[in-house]
Image (tube, helix red, strand yellow):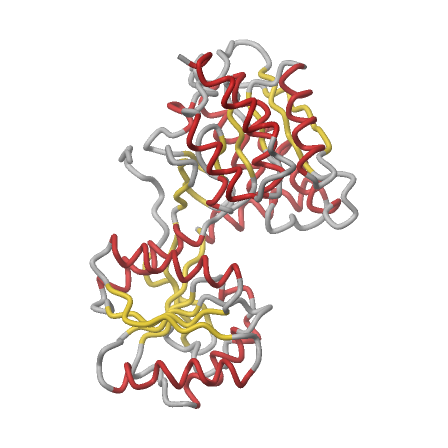
Length: 390
């Protein structure tokens, strides 16, 4: 059956350089099923390729941290030996595709990385007809599917956790205030999808450009919905590096009081304690991974390498942890999509996670708030998924 798809795959491969990312991803998803993965000998060292942008001047530090984390995880495995082979993508799709092919030609049965979505997509296209799965560090769900799985934390996962929790608290009529860029639009879409899955509804979405006048206008259009009781929750998609601090200041100043509407943040609000004095922060909901697991990983990394890990380093740790757990159980199909998407998931650098058959992932997240300028956990991150499937 797979042989019948090869011509379409090769045709799709030929247009990598010519087509836009979403078009290429659509070609990918339409023609091929998920890769079965080469068979594994659990009793021998298992070759795993790590594709990172070593020679990319803007990402060299990330590449080193990803490799360090992968080696930290490999050294920790029980019952499995990983033969980690590192390849440079230079941060571009063409080099990533060539590196992926070279890795498979040299015996790698699974690929961790690349970092960027375009490079990950190119690598996955190149090796799909050889049955090899790719666990990318990207969080761009547009490229997920087929033989490409994402390890990066996604807006969809965070939105689902927060919308579900909010609905349980009686907050289910939601307004969305989003920075009108690509990330903000993806965040808005994620909240809309999560609302549909969790019995909530989005009553309004208001985008803004990154200036006070545009943001003030968007807030002004949401306020009548709160005043009339049509909206009881306000989702903010922005980051501290974007317009989040301004939104948290202007919202309450323009009548969106936290006592009248539940603020909910789609991004990590706990990373900037200097913003905890803003009027929109107190009592807001936001999500974060397991603090105990994250702190344990950071401490081990610091002890091993003498510096703190890059925020994305844990993704490489997770990839090795997943592969190692499956090999350690003696599974000869450890590299298959069926094994990688087991319902019980894996324990990683920031807690439990699992890969989904559509190439996305689910990560166990806690729901937190800020009280008196301190982070307080409202609902802890789950320690496991209990084997539930998708």
